Image 1: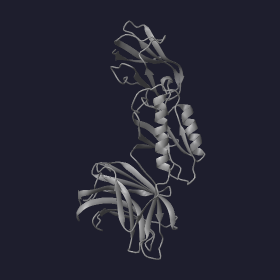
Image 2: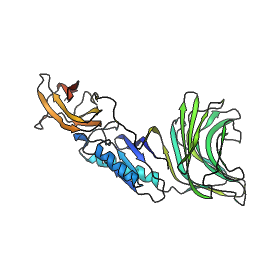
Image 3: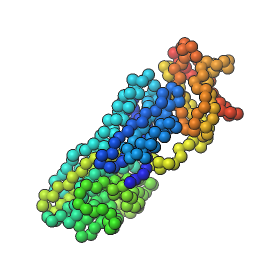
Image 4: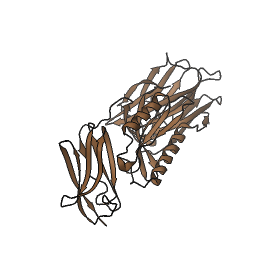
Amino acid sequence: MDKKIKELFIPGPAGRIEAKYFRNYKNVAPIALVLQPHPQYGGTMNNKIVFEIFKTFLKNEFSVFRINFRGVSRSDGKFDNGQGELSDAAAALDWIEKGNMDEDISYAGSANAIAGEVTLQNYTIEADVYCYNNHPNGSAYTGIIVYADSSHQGSASHGIYYKLAADFDADNRFRLYNNQLSGWSYTFVENIDASGYDTEEGWHHMKLQVETVGEETHFTCWYDGLELGQFVDDGDDQYGQGKFGLWSFQNGYGIPGYFDNIVVTQEESFVDEDESTAPEIFSLSQNYPNPFNAGTTISFDMNKAADVALTIYNINGQVIRNLIRGHLDVGGYSFIWDGKDELGKAIPTGVYTYAITSGSQMISKKLILLK
C-alpha cells in the first residue's frame, strides 16, 4: 500500500480548504473526518490531539481526512462563528464521498476519455481499472492518461498524451508512453516487466503522478499500491501540461473497458505518515487581512513546546486583549482577533501592536483596525 499522506487543497464555500488525506484502497475501508479544535483558541489540523487521532484511524485501516477551517493557516475565508465551519466540514465530506464512491464509468471499444484544463500541471490520477489477461477474443488493454492536449504539435501529428497501460497479454508488461491522439506513433516509452505482480483478470488500482521539472516530465507509477518506478521524459516530444483521462483498447471484438473510483488530485507535496512537520523556527506572521474591520487572523509557528502569550497592545503599550496565554505544543497556530478588548467591547480605529512571547523570545508586528 502507498503509505503516504497527501497535502492538498479542496474547494470549499469560502474558497480553498487546506487538507491532508490518506486513502485506504481496500474496497470496504471506512472513512473518518477529523476536525480541528476551536480556531479562535489555537485550533489547527496540526494540533497534537488531532494528529494523534488521525494516526489512530490510519493505523486501523481507515481512509482518513483532516482539514483547516476557513481562515486557518492556508485555508481561505475568515472565522464564521461555527456556521461557516460546519459548511467547510460538509464540503470535506462531499469531497471524500466523491473520491471514494463508485463512478460506474465504462467505455466499449477503443477510446480516450479526456477531461480537465489543458493548462493543468503536477497532478495525480488514480482509478480502479478492470484489467484483462489474454482475453479469448483478442487483445484488450486499459489505462490512465495525463498531459493530453489535442492542439499540441508532436513529431507525428497534432495531439499528444501520456498513458500508463496494463498490457497482460503475451508481453506481460506495463507500458508508460506518449501517444498521438490521432494515431499510434510514440517517441517515449518505458516497458515495465509485470512479473511478480498480480496480473489476474479483474479489478486493480492504477495510479500515475506527473510533474513538470524544467524541460523534463517526471512520472511515478503505482499498481495495486506498489510503486512500479520513476521515469523521466526529456526527449524532443517532451510535454509539460495537459488534461487527464482514461484509455481503453480492444482489437475489434467489442471487449469493454471498465473504470471506477476515479480521483484526480493536484498536490503540493507528499509527506510520510511519520515524518515530522515541526516548524524550523519560532516565527510570527503578518496578520491577514490588514487593515481589517470585523476580524483578522494572526498566525505563528512553534518550533518547540513552550509556554506562550499572544497579546494585543495599543500605541501606549497598554494591554488590550490576551488572545492566548498557556502551554502550546510544536506546530503552526492561527488565532482570529475580532477587534474587541478583554470585556468584549469594540475598540476604536487605530494602529495596534500584537506580540508573541515565549521564554526570552518576543516578536511583535503592527496591525491597523479601520471602522
